[in-house]
Amino acid sequence: HGTSTTNIITMVSISNSIKRVVTIFILRPNKLPRPKPDHGHESISKSLSKNEFQVGVFRRCATMPTFPNHWAGISGSIEEEDASPLDAALRELREETNVGELFEEYFLREKEHASGAVSGDGNGRCVGDNVNGMIRSHIKAGLHVDVISKGSRGAFGGRTIRVYPFALTLPDAEMRHHVSQNLWSEIVMRGTEHDEMKFLTLDEFFDLNPCVPDLKLAFHHATSGAYLDLPDEVRKWEKDRINGAASLARMAISLAAKYSDENCSLGGYIIATNDINHKKCSMALSIAMLRPSTVPIVNIMKEFEKRMQLETKKQDIEKDLLNSLSSDGLKCVELGVDAVMTRYNEWESMKQRQTENTYTSKVFVVGTFSRSSTFKFIIEQFTKKLLEIKKYSTDPSKTASKIQIICSQSTPGDEGKLMAADIPDASWLSDDDFAHELRNGHINIVIVGADCILHEGRGVINKVGTAGLASMCKKSDVPIICCADMWKLWDDIHPPPLEDIFELIPMDLFDRVLVPTD
Image 1 (tube, rainbow, N blue to C red):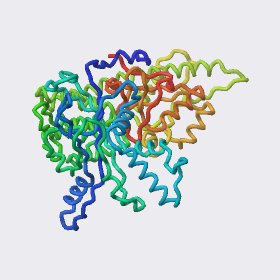
Image 2 (cartoon, one colour; image 1 turned 30 degrees about the vertical axis):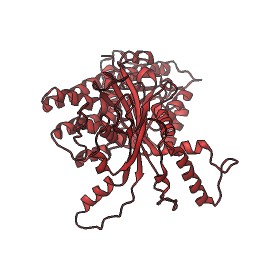
Image 3 (cartoon, helix red, strand yellow; image 1 turned 90 degrees about the horizontal axis):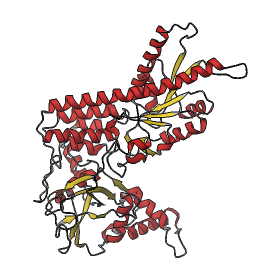
Image 4 (cartoon, helix red, strand yellow; image 1 turned 90 degrees about the vertical axis):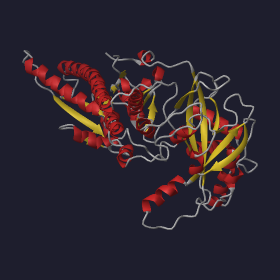
């Protein structure tokens, strides 16, 4: 009924005709005079936000085999030795700019100001690992962009170019400990790929020509849509860190349908100025880039856009996709109910075999973490099924056992409290108390949802804290089951960008990962 790590390999098709590259946008603090406040507070706020940074752009040399004389970010292919797109991005930054050395200088000046002395190696220079860590803390990944470019010449011609975009936000040197604001003006080019570099305001950047295909779209992906002019209702949805993936995906479908005809300024509809690839960023794709870690949102928004391109009525798309989410969700719930019922039957057998020297609690306890509508429906159906079995049982010894649902608080968002409120008679415990109950064998099974199932069994993405919980379940010999539907399967060899509230959990920490096969 479900899949194991091995089965997941065959469930998602990965194209071999994809050229994977990274592109990095360097965002430098822009020192502009702050406008005087007036009654147009909203327009001032947007103006400040839009002009907060300058974007670094680099012109590709005339000798480049692809897109010569076009403006781009720092870019390059992901090589075999690169462990991830991020590692490729950091390598490209080192090869094509002196940003690494400037971060080292920034680190030194911060240390000098903080302690009055420089800590580092024998030459007074800081350890390279500290600089790398600082750069990693200032670089942010966005959802990848697929560029299907038939007009390019050279090795990329006719292939899909999958761009993994990054935004490197340089620290505001003036605001932090009065470090010289001129430091970032010392950025220089290296290598032979580019012949000119310049930093532009966002208005200048959006008017820039000619650019490599979808450069501006990649920028919005790298900045997670921060500079898109989107409806307030969409922005409010974006900030929701309480509801689970399935609930957020349903909201996203309705929002995409409601605002599919809107023309958002500043990239709401971005038309690339190249003859090579004219592509617009629809409302559905804009929504997808806002929450890249929540894969069902990404997948279902891509499907929404695909059907819109076929000129399907948006009302029909909304209805079909909502029905698909419900149908796949029910299949997932069935698998979860079967898993809980199997564990319950094992517990019942142990209880009947107990002797004076053994003890089995008379209460069957199911635990969970965070907030998941999938878990809620699993418990509802499990309880209903259990009552039916007891009702029609002819064995007088089979009396209804008590069921208890315990939700871990799930700090820092406290989603577990809301989960407990969603389920009748459920309760919640602090994360520490929940862990104590686990270690003492007072919880019989733990069920969690997921925001993403990675390709080839490379792991599961869920809320921060899930990995620690799963590890504790292993040590306490308590089975932990992850339930997910088909919309949560990721179709790339690299994980999606991780928002701060998510983490990657190794697949082998779960006893089973249940995904419907059809």
